[in-house]
Length: 202
Length: 261
Image 1 (cartoon, helix red, strand yellow):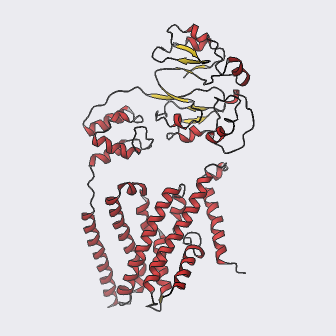
Image 2: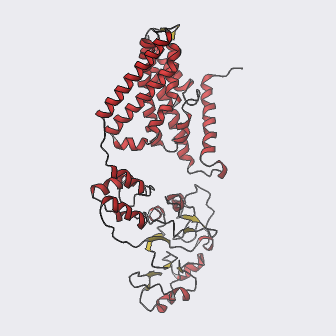
Image 3: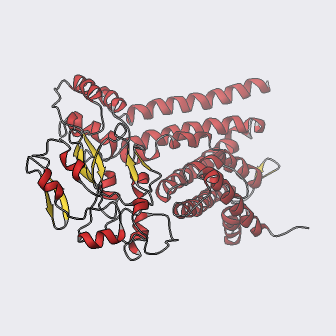
């Protein structure tokens, strides 16, 4: 466990393997809630929080429940269970603590349950920080940190997209491309540019 | 053996989460008035804010608190208001419906002074020498009001002017505040005559730039039997307290500036 490792996790999770633009996870809120910056930011904050929390909980469950009993093949099932319960819990807390935020999230908070970025992060942590069924040194902290970084990468992509789409409001977009089609085109161009971090392979 | 441990572990996880969630839902329970949902369901959901609350949900909340009454919603139909009042156990006061009016007849009839090729928006166009129209009071036709209307009641006609759909207009007043030229006003639907011009220029200057503007000829003043229309500062103004919508002024208006809806 050293600083160098954390830095490389940060760079790779935020830029090189950006969860939306390179790994193509969590695309539906990326297109649906990226029309304005404010809700986009709120959504990213919620996703970041859920990814971080679920990274921690899934790591504990995988290490202390699934591995000792040789049940690694059940990880997808149990992770989905964890994420669903976690989102429910967060929803209850937000509803109690901040009704305004709860209303702002609307249906999207519940939809994080089915956001594949969250499950993707949990599974990636397991793939990266467990070697032959044994956690590497500092595995838990790496998982937690990678969760935060994937959330940051998600936020970055959402903010870029919503910023562009806000400006797009003032442009003359051809009628056929209005709204979603142009968003898809922008998403693909953005994705291509993020692929650039990966370097070219011929 | 393996299947038993698999089932046991998953069952255990499910049980823990189930109990945890049940406990949390007790601890974080929020009491919601069942009336709130019923009222919110009946409200239009356009979140126009004309009632002074942040959206329809806020309005439903303040209705239950009693700080607003049902009539503050300008959007609901009378029928819906009755229903909401029924849920709340109060009676509804009657209010005449207002409809937005455009006080400009320019559009293609008003001359341009330059070709505008910037952002397709009235507020932006207005920043460049007051817009591309030669008349500084004229509608620019870039549909800022169309975008502002939450009910889709405004559309741009072939003349290049916004047209208000009487049935769809809910008098929320968004267009009144969105128009950079302040060309809209809300007038009771019982009044059918209105002035389709906002220009305070003299008749000669109006003629030079627009064929539909008020030239302050005062023919309407003379035609009105109720003393309801006067030319003030080179523009006809109708006093709706006196106007009977007889339409005499509309007949004599040379430029067809006075209109009926």
